[in-house]
Amino acid sequence: MKVWLITGTSRGFGLAIARRALAGWDAVVATARNPASLETELAEYDTRLLPLPLDVTDEAQAGRVVESAVERFGGIDVLVNNAGRGLFGAVEESSLTEARA
Image (cartoon, rainbow, N blue to C red; front, side):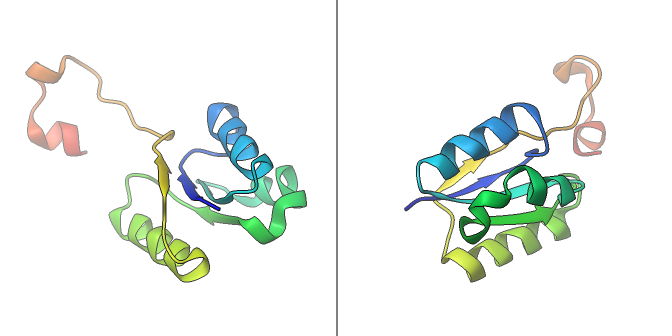
């Protein structure tokens, strides 16, 4: 069994990837800004599912997600960075502060 940490699992690609991993008998740490919908969408996989809140711009919260994953499943084997944030403008014209904001 592999342990997947997937960001942005509330819908779209993230939800589809989570379903596929769970259908393959893997465990999934499914994150979303509001994880309540995950408990409904993926309820049949409750023993292999750990839905957690995550705003990907919050480093402390991201650290807590990793700690929870390790505590529950012993580690993380696969990371899917599906959630994101935008940087508006050309990368070469953006400052480091803008990129980290």
